[in-house]
Length: 196
Image (tube, rainbow, N blue to C red; front, side, top):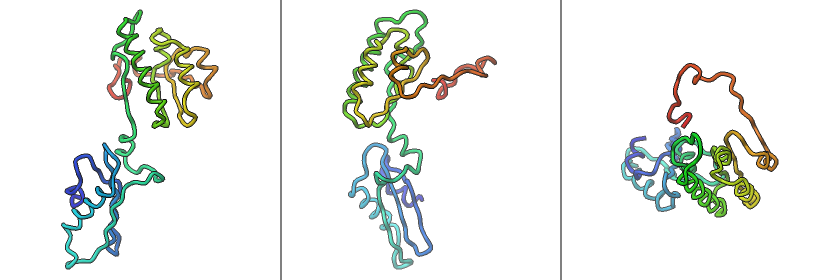
């Protein structure tokens, strides 16, 4: 594997590497920041081939990129295709939201509207948007309009407690989670990467 790693750029990674008994070498590479081009595959192929000696042992070499019709094979492929953005101010609202809280929510909604409109994403998760509605950071009609005007191929998931009746009515699927047991009850605080 180090032979291949040596020739990859900093943002490229191995998706699959196979060498069979007949010395057929198959390498599938991807890139965290850009699609893999034919030139990228040629560069990897040349780099690997440069470090192998056909006079010692014959081999065949195929370097390819993941196809659109192939399932993801490694975790980095998922990460490459997920964008996480925070639009709130990173704090809890205890009583009433400030004007800065409302402005941040409105700015976030405007960007989400642009993202949905461009149609490049198949799924958008508006995490805790129902709480934003509850605290009046956003208006229910704004979210209903967003849902009504989305492209057909885009799935939008809304999360958070206190979903307004209008949202529940429009939704195709509504789930309510109920706490049975929680480690908060034992005094364990929220953990980074789990609860926030």
